[in-house]
Length: 240
Length: 358
Image (cartoon, rainbow over all chains, first blue to last red; front, side, top):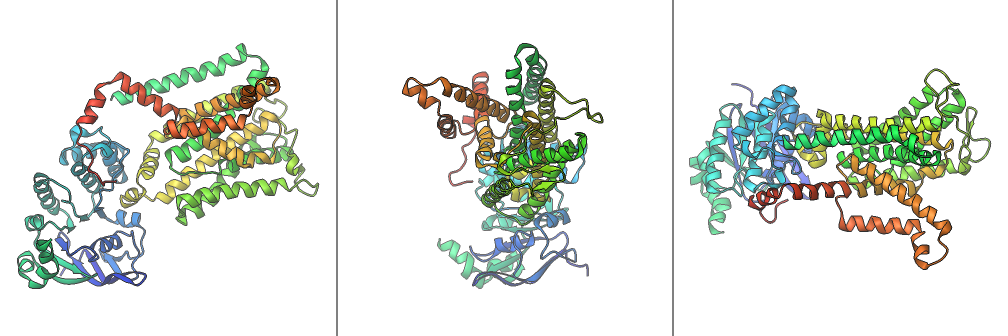
């Protein structure tokens, strides 16, 4: 069997006495699309932060393509090929849409090629008409698209999406689901999402986080039927 | 591409005005004015150094005067020891840059937050002030150069043409040199900011975490920006030591540090021409108010106006409250609003940002 693209071993993050993530053993195969679900505070975002070097784990290890990146700097991990779209869109608000994508593309491409990549990406995220607009002036959904474009333009092997459909209109959610499936043709993805409709559109394998650990891992049909999952997550959401 | 055309027009305008000042001033003005303008040009280079570091790099450095002073002292000390100015001139740029690289390494690679960066750079400046201030005795000397403590170092030899130490540059020559270096610095920085490096440092200023997650190391870019800024401040310091043939520890003082920041605030962060205008304008105003002082003996208004720190302080407060973006960006906004009334409609058309974002 092929070595996993990403693997975590007993990965843990403690903030003082709070164990935000505890002993997570997680593996992702090359080209896989995995959804992460779980209630607020289950440790999903902390988990993402450790995978991208924004937090250094208290103990345990992260292996990416067989290499230990547990204590690597965020920019080094990005260069190894992990890209992340954060929960609150993290973009360059004071710069234009084009400049945003350019900053990303020019990290891996020389000047001339970067221009072409930017033009392609602007088409792909549907913002070619707004290329000169300041990102800070765009609507929330469009900012999400800009961030997705930024992440894609560095051509990562693994993309982490933290609530990509949050705050989007139904139409935008459909488009995002389509784009995620399209991205998955060439790249591995881990998607954190609360919107079960969205998850049903994209997911095959689902990992459920609860209280900092992995509760269960299964395909989407079994997860939807799992009474434990309903109890801690879906039930709560239905009640809310 | 409208923005590009405006950009080009701006560059051409600066070039024309710059060259006009360079060539016409010594012909039209008396020597006193030329001398006065020379120091404005020197200080404008210093203002540009902070315009880069703070305005574009987002690094609020309270210590530009430390690098400025180091440049001035380095030039003076090296000049007394060497006699020929080529190496002292280069040392006055290299030493502050090296010092900034070392200091910046600990600041940026230690991931010290912005507030503490301000505190540290200010502290370093004051340490230099106090250290140099207390070197008055004859035992404090480097080679043949006496440091002079609070008395400063008088009689610093002028720059000469490279290689020929008898061909010293006279007062008018200093005006040409300072103005030419100011113009070269301005256009050099424009080039730098249009380059890949320049665009990345602006990206880091806008969102450091995002830049990092794209694979850029913000520490390295900030360190480079900080070091280039220090080199420019050192260059200005060297010219300043030449202008008055004198340096004293006050150039490390709090007043000097604050003044550089005021130039940038008044002129406008995120522009290069703004801090130049802020610097020259405020220096001109200071000189004007200072000149008033001797004659202003009559009315209480004259007495009030002759208090330069009070008037400058009031101007600064007015700017921070009323024109927070600074002179040049605000004028630019007005110009755009007048020229293109449609812009406003388009912005109004755009969907408003959801409340609670940011």
